[in-house]
Image (cartoon, rainbow, N blue to C red):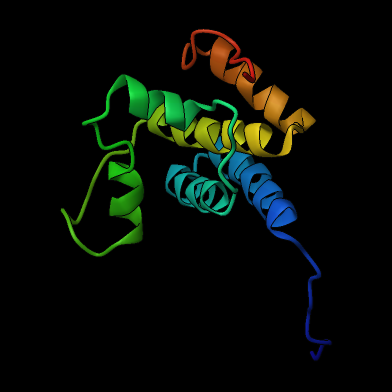
Length: 132
């Protein structure tokens, strides 16, 4: 079977959006490692914003904590061979990516809203976070 090579015309914004929305699907499929890695990639390509967002708040709240410990373990060969990834860790990284996207682009999607609602309803987030 032969096919034509694929091409995709995209932008940083569109790519980040696609990655974050795909990460939500991986999360709900139980693929927490894939969800975390993809969410971190999406978060990483979003430009900084003057508006507040979750990761900036976390770093201010606990400046000595390593909020990328699991992200880095998944991306690099160092560290222990095996680990248990709690659901909350994936929710936190996905939420970081969503909130940075919303802060930078002043836009959201239904997938973002639904995920945040799910996170609140399941006790992972105390409330909906407001853009500031």
